Length: 402
Image 1: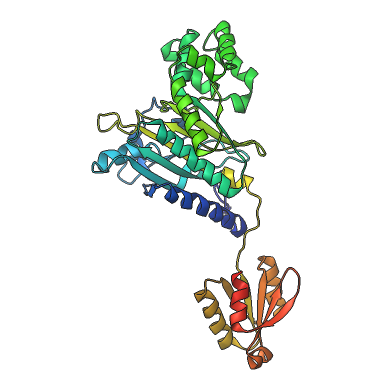
Image 2 (image 1 turned 180 degrees about the horizontal axis):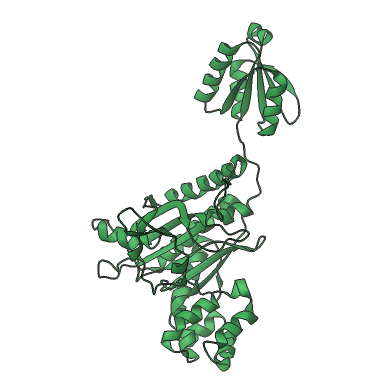
């Protein structure tokens, strides 16, 4: 029997996993700083929660059955679960600011750089229809990426405006969602391919008019009274107060059909990757309770962000090598751990200990032998420089805490 991991999934080893933890610490800290509260939802939901007319993404859902024959699915995002949550938790006080971090799944063809399981970090504001809530989501993103040291570009548009543009050039209402899905592929396929795809849906003249409107600035749409333009203007003004810039992009679509207002994508110019995205989805959350509940949110892609972070992470602070002084080594390890200093104990040959420290990039080793015990000092070696020092326990703790 051939033993291997399932296609489209991956193992994440310590160095990469530690980098991801470091990124998650920044994201989680800022979620809390902006007043978002954590929730957890099931990995498995009933398959009938998805309206088959919703989006193309439904073809990528992992489907399964339990022993009772019930149709189930693995969650493919967090947003769709909010409508069930609001129905089953009617006492939630609005506005409700929630965050969630975890794995989502897509049963799609495997290819380089795309995985069937990936981690999303979502923050949503439920029950606030104002553009202020939109701005809070983007201010959160700006703070997170500033803390991570990533230079970003935030592109914004409004689905009402894009719908009004399509209406202006004469595209029938029933064709607009599909047209938006094709427009959403601009970054992936390029302008020429998207134009060809659109010509199978609308006329060549309409395609030409569409792309001419995509070259217009916001003032044009404001003067012409296009719906959604004023919401973008408000968002731009709020961003200025918060201290960051937005780039108005009238061709930005966000492929999922549940978006209803302002939408955005955040990219890193240095890497050409979309690392966060979101927008307003006012018609989705309240669908099971029979009323409209405004909602807006943003999702951060941990895997994409990790690709853009080039940083060394600390594995373990120090390796303690006991040279026939095991009780003293254990006492020291306990002391260091109580001081919040990570360490590993090793009993045996010095050469094996040093080899181990190098293999895991442990920056310091501490030697404890008869001489050290008699002097009541410990020998600390810097594994990068090779420099060694004899230090008291107090000095050792102070040095390793730096």
